[in-house]
Length: 372
Image (cartoon, rainbow, N blue to C red; front, side, top):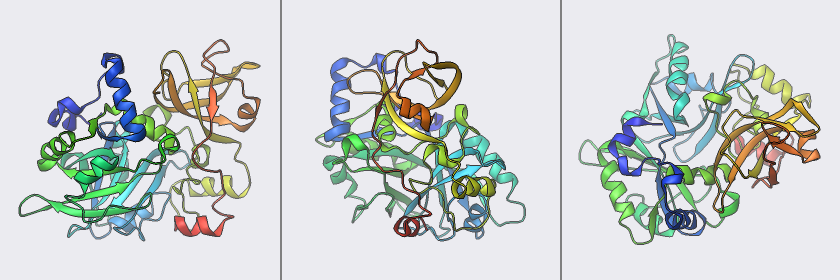
């Protein structure tokens, strides 16, 4: 968790879902599905990358094109080991400040180690990596009442997923603030949701303006993660580092891999997996009842419980009880449709449809162009 944000906004930080009353829980999920909400993204870490060589340096490290990242768009990207296994997944954007800072939003628990690892490879490049959480706080917001508050800062709001707009907040020197439209969550397609990067000095005022707006509900971050699960855009955590090549969690499908850019760590493995048709595991959306599943927890088939067939990637409480989760799974196990958590007598997974189709971006020109 991003501790400095919790210290700044202690009333907004994640609580135990069991400490929230049933009425409050229902109201928060109603806001997530069809109302307006704000949540502190305290499970997210932020790396700021500055310097004239920042884009070129990151371009040689990440799975997506950074050199052609414009301020009006955000992109998904991965950071792989030499074996092509993901060490982190990022949402990245470039602001309009004089130094055109590039931000990488990742899971909070992996941020420090990944920042340190990336910094080791800067060498002579004129680029500097710092903790972006020291300067900006991230809010997830959505719904028409929240958009009315956003409109006080941004003349226009981003109209498409992963579009970005920017403004400034505060007195001179004003600090850049960015707004990124997040991918749709399949269960709340009518709800536009955004990630708002707010300067620390204005974070309390912005939070108060949102929660005091008529119709905006402050949502516990643990519940807001439900939208992330239903977007089908996976997040690598400490428990799942080096477990997946990007395709195993659909990272190329959601636009996180550019197969036409130059080399990056693990690029040969990622390309070989794509072009030789060796992808036999995929990300799936599911629901289960019982104890909360944990990232990295193994999944098994009842017919062969001694051999794991997959892994939990991330999970969140579901509106009507139980948990919704993203799982990485053998395609054959998904077809058999008899997958359990942890053991043959563990809770059964009930699968649901992701909000996108599994399409090979190397075979569809429109998708390739969108990823470039």
